[in-house]
Length: 275
Image (cartoon, rainbow, N blue to C red):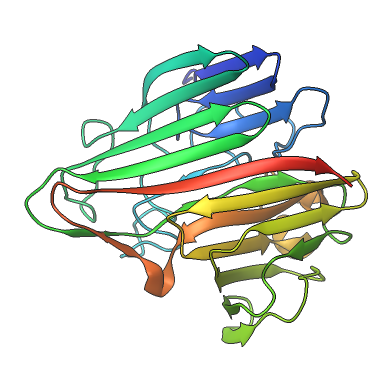
């Protein structure tokens, strides 16, 4: 039997966190004196294999279905064993870094020389910086997302603000639309918003707001499978009301071309406020 994934734990004055080497998955984060901010179903991170539907998976170098049916959904990074580069503590803030190269993850659908670095800064807020470096002689195109599962009291009670007026592709309905007002989830939701604005998730059940800010991301993805689809996802199941995914992405028409010798960075910042 394979060993469970190695985790890097941070426990300090600013709060607690856990980052797995597999997928460089930020599995848990809770600022001091607050409830957990990331959704993690019971047992998440305790078994080897693909990362769970939890925390903040790294989708790279494509988002959604792969270039061929046999290619893994959401790319090669989330199932790979990343290099742990170390943890640096500066006062109340800890920074955990991981790296992925072709030595750890290759694919016939991704034959490019690359370096992928994830820097996770854990303090009163949480910041992830995902940097893609092109080490080859030809440009390549990257689709990507930081697929954050945000813990909520009941997804049917939350309001997602900051997207008013944004165009989005509704993957459930298969059509493009424009958001009017706050988003209130009432069923299966899978939307790619073309927006770089801050997003605020207001959660009256837990009495808090989660504020999402990004750099280097053209899109926001909002996802929840709802009850019927969640029943077919082993580690979500009946826990589906306990999260909403609000992701930073470069997807669909907003994939990124990285020139030879260049680096593109996608940043995701998460802050908690009381209602």
